[in-house]
Length: 152
Image (cartoon, helix red, strand yellow):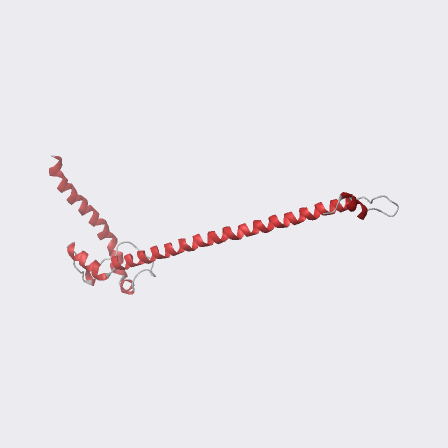
């Protein structure tokens, strides 16, 4: 290590006075501040990269869970909507297949939404509102008759 006297001799002028070291110290302080800022910025960026990596990992796991849940729901939908299952449940409930001539359209729907067989018979669709109005009235009358003994 150098002694203070030896260091002083380095900066000593030929005429015996030492030059001002203020400019050198200021330059070293500015350089140290710049290096510190660069280091802080680099650490902050590395921290951001790590945070985004963890976020990406978490979202990827969440996506996997959601895809699995969707697959399970699609399987459940396919199972519940299977024609054989629906036919079996309808039979258990006392329902039976209906011939096409007994099918009536209730309400009006855009022509694009109706099957082609229904578009071919628009007169049946026009006659339906009267039938649709009469059915609820008959049902209400039946319910009223069924309730009458209960209220007595």
